[in-house]
Amino acid sequence: MITGPQPGKTARLVEAEVARLAIEDAGLDRSQVQGAIQLQAVGGKGLAAASSDAFPRVLGLPVTFSYRMSRGGGLAAWGITSAMSFLELGIVDYVVLVHAGVEYSRSRAGKAEGKLGRQQALKEAEGYWGTPFGDLQAVSHHSFLASRHMHEYGTSSEQLGSIAVQVRQWAQKNPRAHFYGRPMTLDDYLNAPYVAHPYRIPDMSLNSDGGVGFVLTTEDRARDHPHPPTWVHGVGFGDAMGELWWEKANYTQLAVKPAREHAFRQAGITLKEISCAQLFDCFTAELLFQLEDYGWCKKGEGGAFAAEGHIGPGGDVPVNTSGGLLSAYHFSDLTGLSEAVLQLRGGAGERQIHDCRFVLVSGHGGEALSPGMCSMHSTLILGNEQPQSR
Amino acid sequence: MAYDKPLPSIDYDSQPFWDGLRAHKFLLFRCRTCGAWYWPAAYCRFHANEPFMGEMEWQSASGRGNVFAFNVHYRAFDPAFKDDIPYVYALIETDEGPMFGTNIIGSPPEAVTVGAPVEIVFEDHPEEGFTLPKARLREGTK
Image (tube, rainbow over all chains, first blue to last red; front, side, top):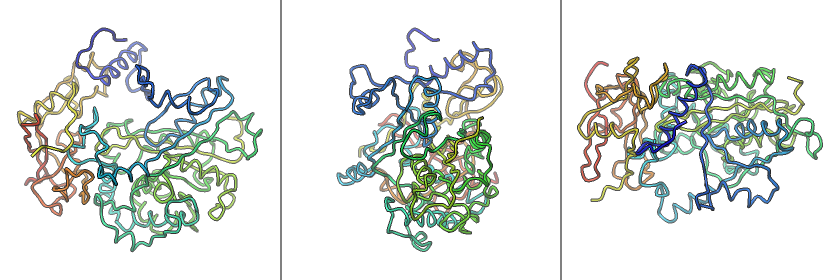
């Protein structure tokens, strides 16, 4: 614990120092501490409209607890893992988890007013780096992953394009997808101008309006409800901060390894049992990396694998059957979760995967430091049969 | 002409780094116990630390590195960058180890390749009170 005035110091520094003290007090080696939670006071202080306080009021539910979680794009995985604690402790019987946004309309309104980019403060966010150099959007640094993979493995623009094209093909089967009715050929992709080379617009995920909500409960209550339940078979996490943030490998792979090991071990299945995968596709290279890192193909071969047509309709490794973040809607990993539930219930219509039993949903994101280090990864394995006792 | 690009975040943790830049020095954060280099300032990963990173300090670094990855912006996401289009934004692997992000200036984008050797140069903005670190391609085998 630290008390007394700390003039000039950042809260971030004091957080790191009390972490050091706690670890020392516990007699642990730094290398043993693999989880960290930043507890941050939000609202109060007369700022009564802070969203963490308005949320339960507007919700209109008799909640014993509510709180906000955020870290990159693994929102469903974080939410499920933490909600499980409350359920297992018997604090509540049901938890509703929600994600929503109006980024599509907000960015269009900003453009109309000539304020593109100006919704950002004129000063770089505290502790961050990049905007003074023109690092202004996610593509400004996520493009480094594509650049590095192309350099190390010869991945081509055409191969990135084949990913965008196949995910767009799935969107043609989803009437709710943003690009429903707007197919794209590889020529269309290659003719699209560069935004931040090597990325073009079709390499980049959407801004969307809308949201996803789901209710989590204990297994003994799961069957009391109108629809067949979707069961959580496994959940795992990884973070590039497990190594130095600038570890070179973090630019050609994602922190998939610990996440998939935890999730698949809990589920007791292998990749072969996965019927379809909903992989976090903020950009095409991130999807490519996951094809390698989960083991559908070898490291470096993701481009060739995608170009062979495995992931689109008719392929043997169906990926992002809703059209994903690239072509359907961006609700973080709830895009994948909602599609997984539809598929597992047999309710995916024209894009239904035959005999769908297990779906992998990944989450990804959360810059550890701009530029470039998108660090967290989550793996969720969902199924339509109750897990056998663990 | 008013400087209308975003201003850097300069705080307690990074103040010495920015002071160094104004003196045209490129500093990195180093552990006196084990010699590991870091950027930005962080607790050392490899052993117990002294209170508030007492064993770490900012030291002069070579200012040299190689392009690890880069992009070329063809679109200005903020009007302040319109005149810079197309501009290169790169991840530089410093000779000391840490990665560092900045623009590569003084060469056309086509001249930039992954692996190219670069050196840090100092772009003074005296009216705004800071100096920005940029990078320039240099001759050299490494």
